[in-house]
Amino acid sequence: MVTPAKIMKFIHPFAIIVATLFLLIAVRANAGLYEDGVAADNERNYAVSFPAFQEAVRQGHVKAHLKLANHYRYGKGTPKSSAKAIEIYETAAGLGEPSAYYEIGYMYTEGEGVAKSDREAVKWYRKAAEQNYYLGQYALGQAYREGKGIEKDLPRALHWFEKGAAQGHAMSIGSQDRLKSQGEKAWQAPTLIASTSSSEQPGPQTSLTAQQVETLYRTGNSAFYKQDYATAADNLTIAARQGHAAAQLKLARLYYGGFGVPKSYAKAEEWALKSGAQGDIDAQNYLGDQYGEYGNFPRSWENSARWHERAAKQGDATSQFELGKLYYHGKGVTQSYNLAGHWFEKAKAQGNQASIVMLERISRQVGKP
Image 1 (cartoon, rainbow, N blue to C red):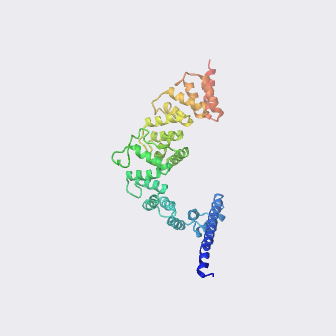
Image 2: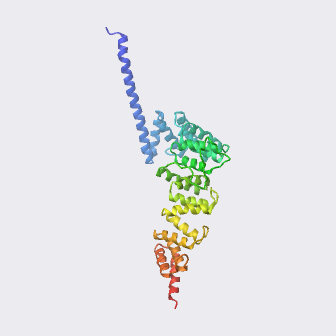
Image 3: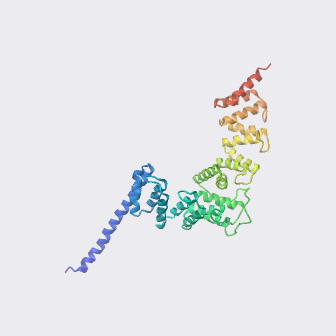
């Protein structure tokens, strides 16, 4: 006899299977909406991406919240609304997405649609950092280092940089190594810093990938032009120590001008030499100028000629012109109108107008009885 109990015994596992199948279908549809939105977003087809992310959010897709918030934040496919973006970021954070906290903090740092507030930014960065989000850790470390929105505390800054560095974040690694290498006895905490060395020495290093080093250089270079010299020095120093030639030259310029580091022509010379030895044309030209015309490194016309020649042979028009001048005047090289003319001609071929004037002078000199 078929009893209700026997029927339920059969239906119960069957119902579970059906429910599971429906759940899987819903999850796949959810993911499909998100992926469609991402594809359209990459093509800047916001008319498609915006509604796709809206629907994915309604179905509970966490990452879709971030995308939808970005659409409101930047006015992509919908009127711009910072308030709506923050609301959605907060929802995403509540669903376990710590990067959303960081985004809100960044909006307060930049005054992006909200009243600029370093203190408010720190509150949100801390939420992200405490959930082990590397950008939150880096931003909180920056706040402690610079005393923005919170009392300056270098040991705490190092603590958060180390947290970010442990996750492989290039800028955290650079800031961590920079602080460790400063050797400031007034604030060092033995539990945080096992060993230190003078900022004049290479100091502690962490192995980085080429991509991480390039990121450090680009970040430092960008910070330099924004006159954020502390950030520039942090990032360029570690990139330079990892052998990035352009970073070495930029770091030399920081030391030369005293931007974010103590002014030092000796350190500028040291880093420029490292860059020039790797074949960086700009560094070779820079060394030629500093040893010669500018004289801020120990003046040596021989060294000036040597470095300008290296750059000139790589096709640098400026160094070709400068080398021509050295041969014209006999500075650092044996005087020779022939060799001066040779290099002026090369520079002229690249559009160096001053070379035309010098070639005319040589013509007049050679034409004298």
